[in-house]
Image (cartoon, rainbow, N blue to C red; front, side, top):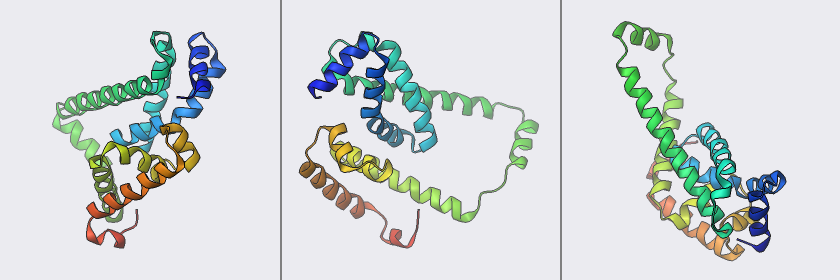
Length: 190
């Protein structure tokens, strides 16, 4: 973290909302990328992003070392994703315990998804699984750039990298990703 960011964390700890908002601006793409990798769902990641910053704002005074802000924030995001996954699992279990009559009524009301949409979702899931299997040093830069749409300068700032090291990570990461993709992947569009 830069000295300016450390000063922002200190100001935010003292209740400066503008400082906290600037920290959000500087870290939101990074946290979103982490949450997207966890959930695979942009809308869910957005919801968890809001939850993460709310929890961070409420507990910012507990942060001992301002230099550890990013790792502390990513831990909060990770915990929010884990809590959401547990909650989803409990909801799914509760839904399977409903009487058959009400469950069948819900199923009949839903439309069967189009074959193309199912195929696209399946491909998206495959790409996410491959992305998750890559080493951490490639996962976040690739997610920030190609899923989050962040520019090079933003990614360098978020991850504390030089432009050259980021370009190298993206190049090697894409090479690994392409090597793991199905051979007929080029015929599909996401």
